[in-house]
Image (cartoon, rainbow, N blue to C red; front, side, top):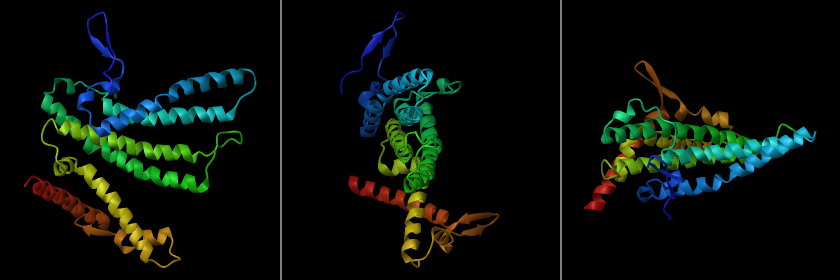
Length: 271
């Protein structure tokens, strides 16, 4: 990888023109993948500027093009969604550093790890799940523009939106592993344990979809998605003052099983 270009300002400080090259020697494969994809999508911004200027000129000449309006949103939405992953990897997102700046190095690392794996990554996993159904519905309907002269095949953009959450998850997990390595040896079971909410959310999705497909396979041929959702396995059980779904209880057990299995694998590997 080429060294980043450095610019020395008047006050002697050094500015690096490519944030993706900051700390490149510490980046893992996930980090480099996110930076690579982001650098490709960064080229959408020149095309976005051309599209905006062209539409302004055409509209002023009385030749408004609806497809150009849609095209601008396609370009902007794609670049911004991928840019979120890039900002996570390069740590170039907006921070509120009133307290954080005064933390010790170790406390900063722990704070970043909690923020990434207990707050941000669970949200990304949920967003991926929600937009998956959103995307599949758009593909099934062959969704297009609201305008007859607009840019159709809107399902392409919605598919990209769903895929962008996967890229964000890769970015969050990669930098998490990189930060964890500065505190301890980041073996798999530690990665899964210290990121417990993210691990549990991922196991929950895998569990839910696996059970859904199993029920669908064993159900009568005329069973609908609503019928499958009403199966007893998706019901709730009363625990004290709370109602907890069976799938959540199964998920909790499986999460500890996965972490335990990773721990045994790590022990056998080092034996």
